[in-house]
Image (cartoon, rainbow, N blue to C red):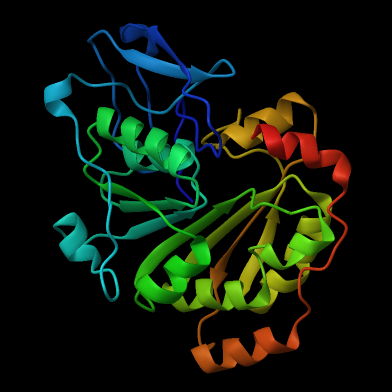
Length: 289
């Protein structure tokens, strides 16, 4: 996992953030294998709930185009999409892009692809990616399961991130929960051998379920404590949860080597569906973020 200081992660909400001025005193130093970056020019940054949004807004002539408005007929070709061959990072349910933009700013050597089913949050993500001149990222309005099943070539992705998947509280919507054994088998299929899967939630019931099924497909471990790269939160939802003193559950794992696609599918068929009590007291927070 990469480590960056002074840059916060990803969001899953609708907030534009507040545009504020800055100066060279806010230069960002990156550690963990990334180059030192110090800006000596005035900076234009955004904040959400007082937390700086990753990167800075560049002059318009330096903006990028991060929208993928039409999906291909077949699988995505990452080299054609980004114009180079590089490790690919996916963010499923990326919201307005806080985590993914933070990663793209810090890791210019990696290409980034984010999707969400809500067009409004993808518009915010795209705008922010454009304004930061991030040619190493694309956004699309698309569901996570559809992306993995239809468009991602098996064994073509280095990292897959999934932050705060919707737990769904009504009994009639339980079937819409994203993290299922079939979904995890798809994640495993799309990752390179030993590729990284990261998942986070503030829902205790969801986390208990994830902890039970994820180790079948990944060498999975719970992370104790906040992310080093974003101690105030990688996502908008995480920021809100921590401000409300709610527990946030974080975990990651590498795809098990030697587990074939057919074996993963058979394992998925033998595992329970995500039937758990989502605790309706958390519903208001979901409506916020």
